Image (cartoon, rainbow, N blue to C red):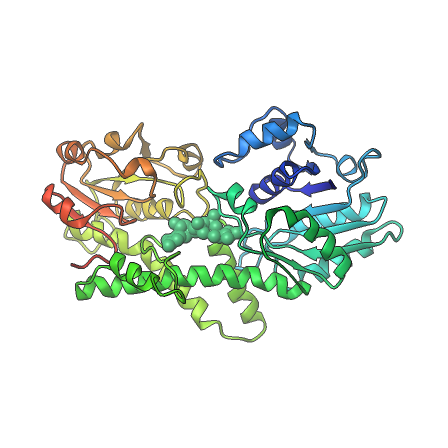
Length: 443
Ligand code: UDX
């Protein structure tokens, strides 16, 4: 059992803190957002993540997990002084794609000013290569009197929607530090999970996170490029991905063609890695192509809608007078997150073309309502379909997999479906009488 402080109760911080508590440690989570902390104390989660609320409640009840806005309470509790402090604050993208480090800086400064005993500072936020050294400098310079500390990089690989099982069953744990003893102490926390633990230097650990996310984003853009070619040549990208995936060197994961990647990580991290390369005078041409293909995947969905139901016009009124229904608003299923969401972008493109939009998402509508204008948010998929000229399947929620398609066809104005997630079977859709387009399904 160790005493741990976690700074930041966003996705990464809350899941990390809760899972460490569930493994028997005593965890205090600290955040500057008073409302978030007050809500957590009342059992209200700041994010939608399957299974999280129940584990939070269980560990709070057992006295292993608590929430505070006070760094002193989290770090210097006389009965349980923290041995390790995890920084898990967000690192949004700055104007040039560089990661914005003001929250990391603020956390490092607060740790330096508050700590009254030696600490291991573990960085979980995705930060540019070299940030670990920078954090160490900040802490050293801001301490009122010198107290020993070490910095360890421990990048997080969890996915939204399956964050808890990803944390509990890691493919690997990466730790980076020059201080072997500190890295070993962090490693001990992860031993019960039985995953491989790799200890390396700080900068290499930081790079492993970017390289991993950029590689997965590349896989997605690769299959979207193949999908594009499949459409022209009459092949089916779903079968192509299946056939490729049997090769162990390739693997089937992350070969789903569709709307391209969205979310809080891939778009930001690929951009940040390209920015780091550019600053060093390197030319990250593969990463540039990955980003361009990703942007095209969203545009190509709107192009399909225009081609099927649009007005014969080259102006901005190509969808004027048309109602387009959008099923799904989250950037993927099982999350309410709409950061860098493909459906939101697609809706804006339809609106720019003069189209009216109706939409539905099982959990992301409250978040979407904050950023969208003039969209009719509906109670279910059928209300969206009613009177629509075309439907776009934008997020692969389970509840969209078994819709009553006969009913949908009956209530739509025109039976047109553009399936951005390849959820449906093209021959079945044609048999039902739909004009159907998937992504990369040229046969
Ligand atoms: C990702 C990484 O997987 C995780 O390791 C990292 O810590 C954070 O970023 P996340 O953003 O939660 O996780 O979602 P992920 O499941 O990886 O999907 C990212 C995006 O790619 C989604 O928009 C998804 O719809 C899209 N995607 C994924 C595809 O378009 N095709 C695929 O085959 C897989």
